[in-house]
Image (cartoon, rainbow, N blue to C red):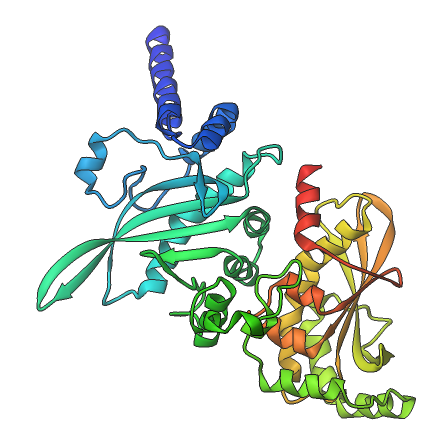
Length: 430
């Protein structure tokens, strides 16, 4: 009996190993020379992704396949395999494609709701597996996923069913940020930095509610080179600043942003009398802000919010503590970037909501003391953010990097330039 049990276990193990390997596209089916070389060199890492993929529970049947939009009976007869290196829009990508046999009702779920369900059921779990098992030594630029699901419609009282394809391209640094995201807002920000297509059309995937707001859709299309905004004459478009996704000319400007821009050109009064007046004017607002946001912002009790004069403007200074859960090492730039990603970026939108009514000051100085459990010393970092950047970020018209580029960053009192993605990649490469 013991021998028979051992043989059964061995058969199951071999079967699982065979399934795992089968999900990786065979070398002979990779045509591009660069992709074929990577497929051969890093085949072991692709197998690790495949092994973890076998442990994922998909709510409905999912098959790894290069051939999309085929019925399940035919799919079962075909060999599986789609985990591969490939080329997409001039980039080398780690690609995974397949058929997800769920059938959505178009009358009950709109395009965004269908795409979101497939993203949550299939794409995100596979992305986490892929990120976990590809180290920084593997030379590719992005993760690409293409998943086909089914949609039921009724046309002239006749029931029909057809395929709908969701494709998402995650830049590598964005993918790392996404899989570590602890809240929906962080995931949403990462998705807006990715490229999403539904049936080949650019698509704004929105994680809350029925659909993305129209202004977010317009900005997303402009950012990724689609829509009416891109028809502007090239002579009127300014170069995109380093680390950003779109020229500021392509981002719609709110009334508040125009007010802030006009005020910037006017003579600034930063006298003690004006700062005292601002304190009195916003005292009731701050009385609400501090207790309501204390847990999330981790305000310092001994340094209540105050108005300061800085860079020819008046700023509200909010003093906080940031405790890094993941070690950032000794690089002050990496520490500052991780403080922004893990803490400050989550405070920006909630704080901005308190000052929608034409604020009479120039912006907010998010001052934080960053602590690491493995390091006895701390680091003082200030993110001095003008309201134009805050409102742009609040509406998802700007990425975190674009907000950083339009702000002033101080580390221990010295102004620095901060590249979030580079700091992210450097951390992963350690």
